[in-house]
Length: 135
Image (cartoon, rainbow, N blue to C red; front, side, top):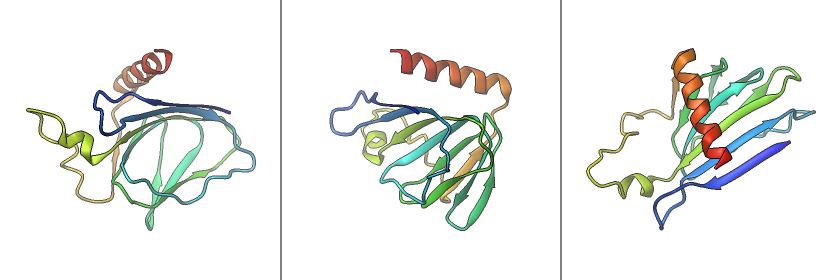
């Protein structure tokens, strides 16, 4: 299992978290959990879906799932394929510290949002995440 967690925040009071994980959990050991920050989950590869609150979310590689803080969720591992993902943990206070920028997550009214950015954008996002990981 490869798990790397980094504080990539330019702010002193709150951590902006970055994680890259590639593993093959056998048996799948993911449980329901929640976070005290907004989670931006980028699904790179594998064979998973998600349970979010009482909703089943079908996932495809390249999808981005944004979860508000304190939303209970867990991945559903559907096969023994390697499961690769990128997480960003964004505390509310980090967004409040940004000067001259409106909260970019203000549109997130419900507990979740599934984005399907397309192959080209997904490749750019994964390339940027790899650069952060390598730094």
